[in-house]
Image (cartoon, rainbow, N blue to C red; front, top):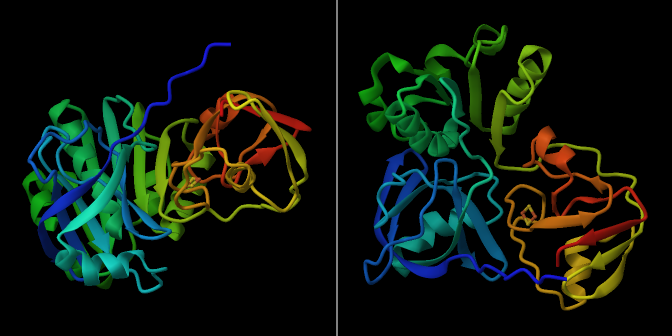
Length: 321
Ligand code: FES
């Protein structure tokens, strides 16, 4: 058996070189290495982990330019229903001066296309900024529909203004919700749809694309787990190929938990199938995918799974762990 080298991802304390309120309740943080050294490369759609405290890790999309390796920028919305992450970012990070960062990782990569339709809701604009810059540089046709509660709450409108009428700004208090039937009612040829925003918006876009757009046209990134049927978990055997261990995963525990308890090195963050941190290569077994990240094609490939939520339909699962 050939043992694969474990590639450790970047993890470091970065200096907060700028923090500014770019819209109501939206703080933009610019981060750099303390010695000014280059940060790892990334591509549009990538996110980083901010390690905000013990067991408090949150993911934020990079919204700077991949061409600038000296600085990363993220935009953080102060969420009223925050489980603590955005509150810490808004209330404490400026004073701390540094923040532990892991990544970047990209589960929302751009696929080359002659045409793009970008739809952003609220803070979902952040991954779109490098994406539209990339589409523009590549000479692709594109347009962005950007919805939000009000202009004051919509971040980065100034940066988007340079794109003129390619960008439609739809503040709810002035114009209501984006007209998704008009946007997505009939598929446009050779067009990929990229969207990020609140669950309601993404569910509505997903339903419209499923009705008439080609498979693979829609690419979306969720902030929180998609509502799905997670009932009916059964126990199964778990074989960890590199560790040489065979474990039992009971019906009421996750693969991630069982591995941790057995002392196997696994990394996780959201533990609800949203961030992609725990993605693991599958060697054998019929996966019961329960995450909100992989698209249908990726799920069907049976190559990777999110071990914090996904399970196994066959009696035995072998992982590259
Ligand atoms: Fe976030 Fe598993 S830990 S997807």
